[in-house]
Image (cartoon, rainbow, N blue to C red; front, side, top):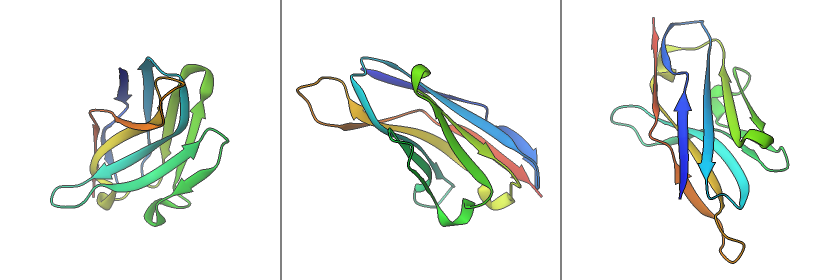
Length: 121
């Protein structure tokens, strides 16, 4: 089983910054990518940022130039630095890991419980 624990969410004023972290633990054989998604009330879950095991980064259009995703492979941890936050960034932020728990198995997706980010105007 793979467990993802997010931390670092909270309340911040518009224009401020936050960094959220996601630490993966458990039976992890390999990681293909880790990423962050968010879901606001009444909206679909959307990609915020994703980083692959080769370091390739992909960002959602609304966060380009403001958010930066990084990773510490040795710790199976990914970070999301969020700058110039806007009220529209308010959502529950979920960490996702795409990887394998066994060399005989293909990749699967694992999700964290989510951390709330609220940006006040």
